[in-house]
Length: 244
Image (tube, rainbow, N blue to C red):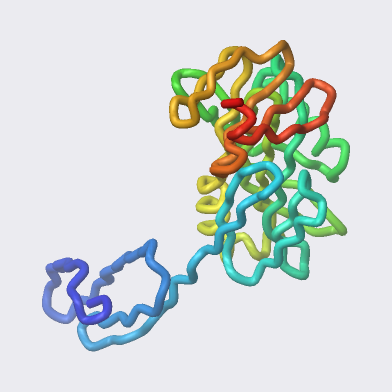
């Protein structure tokens, strides 16, 4: 019974005097306290809710577990970590629009190998959107200040931007954070970005961008599109400017 409601049952056939073991597993995506009762044996557990961080500069969002503090003083390198340096980093880089997702992933690997002791990829898988590979999910390990760390991350490339979200904790904390790490990385949502021909029927916008220029949908009604030049300068184009 979970909070007074039956959630599952099992049967076990035993001979007289014999004993056996029955295991129940229950999980929930809803935060809150849960009371458990199995044949008169009671217990409880708590599911902690995830908070949401949204970037006002780069228009992405990511969920993170309790106990982590957001440091977004540097918008392109946001840290959401505890006092031990465990948690999430989100890096955003300007890239050439012709850079592939694989090239960006290889760059991230090289940078991490240069910066972190014995950094290595344990496993990786493609992120596919509309039939095209836009990034890679990965599991990795490395050493820092004599301690082994494990991480789960995702690298994505859209138009002229690269996004790298990484959830990292000491190996001794992995059991505590591994579920939250997967949920955080899976929750990462980058904005819609485009190169070349772009149109938005909601705002009546249609244009063709010059080479190496990017258009990013901000989700803001008063400035729906961010136009980025190849010279790393950003301009917000307001809705009224499109209809003058």
